[in-house]
Image 1 (spheres, rainbow, N blue to C red):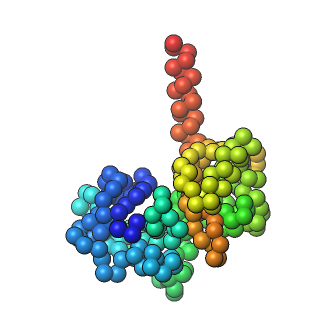
Image 2: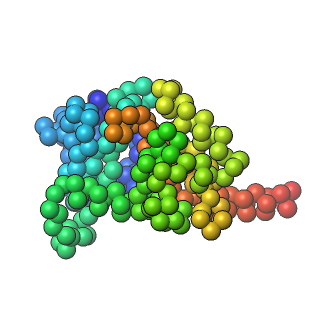
Image 3: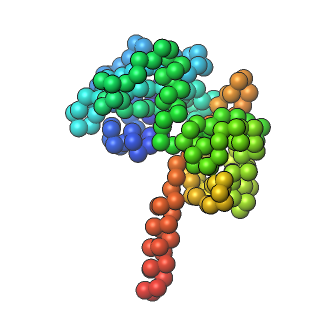
Length: 231
């Protein structure tokens, strides 16, 4: 947020830096005050994404090279905030491609994260990354411009539509929840969705991070059935 507090972090971040919470400059840089060139502060000030590299020390004391991309959010639980996407390029740094522009590096990052990322505006998909298209099983041109509900199980559509409506209305609905994705070949996959309100080309939209939790759901169901058999 605008006070450099970490409001949410995923499992990858926790693996690198430990339990949620705290100030970003303490975790990344072991500093007692914000960095002079803080990319999050710049994104908050300008409303524009920024991509930079950071050499950090993880919780095990190992030095790592990270690509850090900040994206503007209109708010997070009523507070100004940014979304930071982190990619660990420590191993690849010796043989990585030499980017011609920061935009190329930013696009590479978005296209190679392990979660699906999509932007929904006016109920339609206006952006989706490579992982998102592979989850659905359709080429990009068959996804962009289509209603997002086309890819959601009919029983889950009211929930997703209601959450989108509340985000766009400036409310603070639960931002992480499971739903069922419909793939191109007719299969159903369980996903965990995390959504935030953003501005896309000057208009409100939702930024959505999607993680496949099918294996977890199937394990939970198998455990439930096993417990019922032995009652």
